[in-house]
Length: 374
Ligand SMILES: Nc1ncnc2c1ncn2[C@@H]1O[C@H](COP(=O)(O)OP(=O)(O)O)[C@@H](O)[C@H]1O
Ligand SMILES: CC(=O)OP(=O)(O)O
Ligand SMILES: [Mg+2]
Image (cartoon, rainbow, N blue to C red; front, side, top):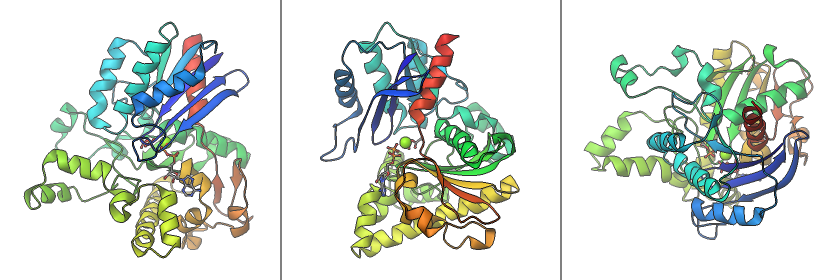
């Protein structure tokens, strides 16, 4: 079955036409730096138009699979999109302000251009529904939390799940017996503790703001920072929301949101860029330690997504100083130019370190095809 997959990220639109029987990519492309000066498109809607124009009209598409970031408590599995589902995804936009509107723009544009094929939403949150209550519960008033759906949902689930499966194949062991820490380091970034193929904890929360230092998002903060910024600095709620989601993270610390620009600046001697990388790596190590403890053991740390797959120096930096936990990166294996899933730790006892290219599109295509085939 040929499935056209649309992955609208916060800064990119990735699309692929996939033959799910063979896994073959019939067509693929990416629009990057969306909304940035000199980027491939000014916004997601016009980006989708470009994509669908490039696709042409005889592509024999049997289904369209859409990445949707927030599925809330309602969507825990791939879902056929109708007008009610579109409305529900729209309602969840408040909980993923950088993503659901972008995802929805893709859904609406694609449904307009391809009205006669089934459209399937595959949710970033779905994989994390296996988290136990002690991992997803915030220690606030229970009634209030329940009424407003305030809990940890977690994101990048399609990627974490796919990468965990690939990691098991590389290690040559059944996923069911593996304890993995998956580091999805892209523009958005999150860590997941995967125990026997199930997510038991993850660094993103109610929204994709919690956790690691990202391109424009702060990640973890004392929640009182928000109150302080409101009461003392006089920022409105909307200003704080925009500050933390759109002008923080690497952008807030360095003036640059793209990791390539930050590493270039650091290499050229920019001290703020260097300091930002130190904060970025410190936060990753914080979660590696935490999830090692939550998992009660560790078979592998797995790097994936734009930064995790392509930046050897940052992989080494993220895990620096963890030798005492047996977590080591082999310099030669790490820096060797290679594309596929691979081990980059020395051949010693203890946890392995892997690089595994994510393929959210293939995972979405397979899930969409399975749903459509019934
Ligand atoms: N060679 C590289 N070195 C450092 N960072 C890189 C490299 N290649 C890509 N990246 C970074 O990966 C990030 C984009 O990752 P990606 O997973 O595509 O993001 P998203 O899906 O969240 O839009 C950008 O910050 C980009 O700079
Ligand atoms: C959930 C999320 O942060 O997605 P992305 O990495 O595509 O921004
Ligand atoms: Mg992404």
